[in-house]
Image (cartoon, rainbow, N blue to C red; front, side, top):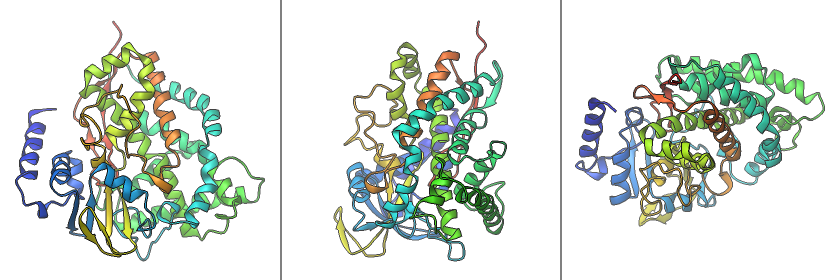
Length: 417
């Protein structure tokens, strides 16, 4: 990190611990773009772990910032509903896309069950050789001794290939999935993503493309891809088009953004903590543990939102029916009352799977094992090939308080001497 970056972070820390607590508003995209959100969450965990604030666009909400409180909210869908949205933003009235992660039982359970076989242990086991083969092809195509963008060349490519496989999506069009994922998740005004109307038009293009796939699969015998599963399952085969689009959005983002940003995050983490890189090189048996630690340290989805179904006292605060309640996974994963030395990246932690990145309760990430598989395989294949991957400059981060990720990460694989 250069001196300018250090100065920015130092100033953020001074401000976070000097400003009145009621003025702290953490759902600020700029804090995440500049990687300066950390001290604000630290302050909230210490002084106001159930914190009320007002977002300038999305209105009032509660921030839940401590690990055990997040688990309590995430596990209680009776008092804290996933409807109507899992983000701080409310659904657009003229472009509402229902999805099963933003539903409560019984509809949530039935629709989740329809797609769960795609990421069953048996299916993931069967996918591993294909993921490994493709990971090898990607890594063997990388330039040696030259700078390149790891996000584009590796993280996006591997996860998009895997997602195309899950959908049985035309391989030559797989980068459409990347584009649609970016259109869905990037905040309003992000460069290269157009106006609100243009983005909605792109999502309708996505729906049209997938409707053609649906029509092919619904008239054919059931297969093991996600589209066929939804087309033939009783709980999903009669979905309205916008609900189909909503579930596609969920599966695209869940299968693409989160894993790709954790793959990129592993490069950043190992370069920031070179002693851990040395530890990995000395013991490749640590890769599974390293994967879990990366998922915690990166936390690719910063938050999930719930909506209170009734008046409830929580953490000494009075939450009213209808209030937005935002669980900051990114903060819970740095709670030093639960996780020892949480800001450090330690690949041989005693309990590396102790984190909230995948959520808890009925909404726990349905594809978490597939995400871990991709991370494990890519690092097993990396370590067969490259003694070192160097980070050449500070990465360009996504300006989003929801997706914690990277737009660009310039790396170099040194030539072997």
